[in-house]
Image 1 (cartoon, rainbow, N blue to C red):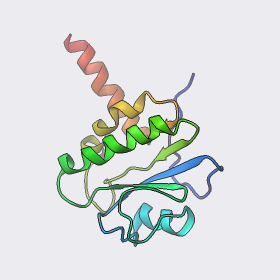
Image 2 (image 1 turned 180 degrees about the vertical axis):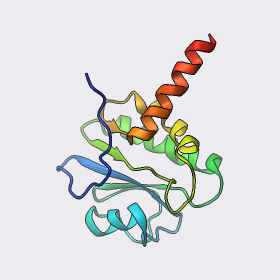
Image 3 (image 1 turned 120 degrees about the vertical axis):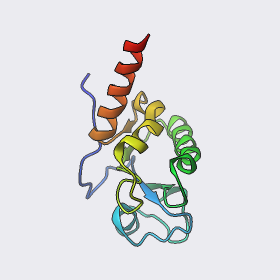
Image 4 (image 1 turned 60 degrees about the vertical axis):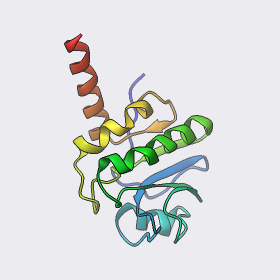
Length: 138
């Protein structure tokens, strides 16, 4: 089965779809994908993490990549539990927060195998490359 990816520009969702975006801990959804989440998909001003409306916020503005990982791990657990939903992960942390895809994508390695999580193609490509390199090292 062909791998499915998060579309570049999401303007609408089906009933069981969830828009996953990068946020700040204050939940000030003023720019980038956070603004889209607020305007279109039910993100709540003042809620910096978790499920809200048809969206899920992952904080990315509070420090280095290591500070983002626990939030991504919580999201992955949530996605496992809510397997009736399809989660469209945007390039979280790669816009306003200023991280590179190569820094953020590995955080989603476990999500890569979940049938109900769509990652950006750039994240999937990085995860596939890293897995192939690991396999070659063994």
